[in-house]
Length: 288
Image 1 (cartoon, rainbow, N blue to C red):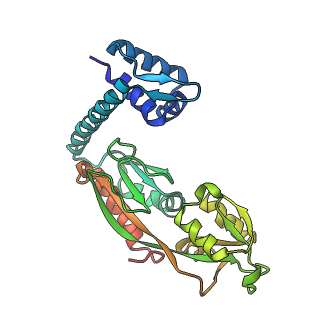
Image 2 (image 1 turned 45 degrees about the vertical axis):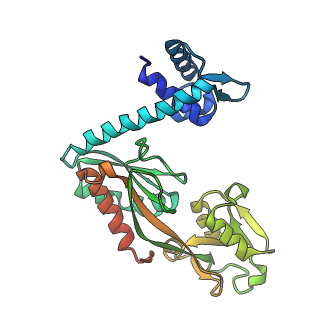
Image 3 (image 1 turned 90 degrees about the vertical axis):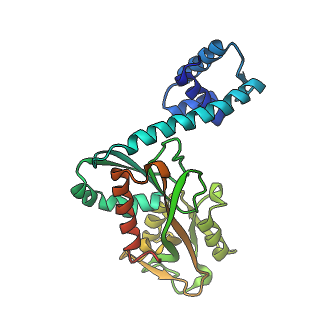
């Protein structure tokens, strides 16, 4: 029988395509991944991976083993979720994954309030732009800006996050739209909806600077670097900024709450879901 831990390392290699990528995902060193993979191949007496100069490629038998290992992982995670759901007290750790703008500028501000009501729950807030896997327990609850499609999950739309154009109140060209300069993301975010919206408005007008974090856009706009496209709940709350561009195309992102069905009724997870739902649905900056 193959050791499950060795299979787990093999899965990470298969997903990342490199030993170093698997090491980062598992938070171990490169040598540990290599040793675990070699041990698994010795246990099964087959070559699972072709080690190329810059990558790892699954062999034919490796691909078959990978598919079976994914099923084993899903079953193991299901057992863990069922066991966790059986625990009734409002205790333990709950991981909440959220887009950085919501994590930093909304959720983090209310952690003390949550703690005051649920002192035995340790809420771990992860600011993540990428989607995480609930089935692999990378998070217990997640907020997403696109409709979730993960099988086995329960999703609910909580509201809509509108965006607008903002500049410093004394921005030099505030009343001269043809001279506006814009604060944008770089080319690696070319497919992000708010980047497309902003660049569509900017047209041939210059990009003043590029920052790959919405908090950076807020700070740069506050400093007078140019015009930023910000969530209205963020821009409207800043006394140094003013909303401009009355006739620009409207834009918004949906906010979705998602949790794995097996954990949906776990009391500690339910408490986090209710906490997040109340923050979004009762906030004036979000539309229904």
